[in-house]
Image (cartoon, rainbow, N blue to C red; front, side, top):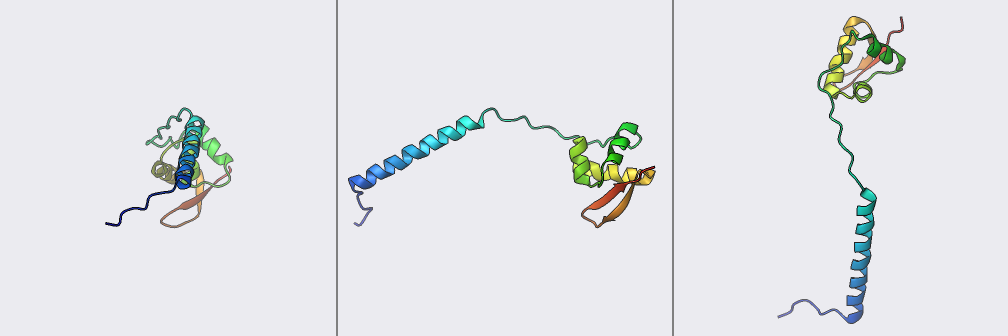
Length: 110
């Protein structure tokens, strides 16, 4: 028996005005978006620890974490972890501190 109350003319006008403003805002957002950027694919294979160019770039960095290496060389973080472990074995970097989650390295300047 009850049902929803019938809106007055003033309330209907306000609701229509709000909808028009919301539509205008949506159109502006769509225009600003433009062309979506292409997603870069990250490499799975880490770079070679014997590559002189890459090792020299790493020695220029102050602090080495898996995240910084992965962003610098566009590789996955797991590959960057393996790469840093290889560099530690070859003696290019040394472990400063770390735990099971993250390890922090610094380059050895020779």
